[in-house]
Length: 143
Image 1 (cartoon, rainbow, N blue to C red):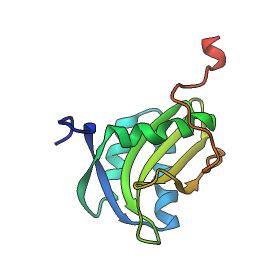
Image 2 (image 1 turned 135 degrees about the horizontal axis):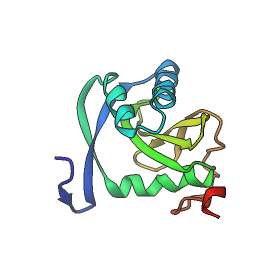
Image 3 (image 1 turned 90 degrees about the vertical axis):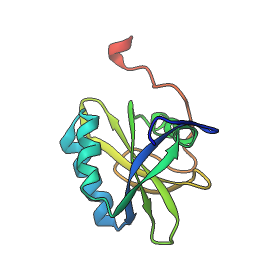
């Protein structure tokens, strides 16, 4: 159940996207761009791509990779689903965005077992060599 405390902290149910293609990754990016800053709309629209029951993911798994998007210049981060890549590996799918710059929206799949970057769709420079920070970079508005 979402929000239930377990050994690894809270868990959240994410949409199960099943085996995905490049078209699916691009559709997810378009969903995120179209939703703007409405995170619930991103989740609702991504759920329309579901191919099975939601998958429970622990908050620690999110925390292990969220900072990679921030290090690449994003200032918003949202996990949206669990997918299976072309090699059969499960990935957690994240949307990383830059407020005010929808074209920077980037979809990233992180391998569940290792946290390594599996696929990137969008312009943010996210790779396995991108650092991992836990705070959002300061923006001009915060200065």
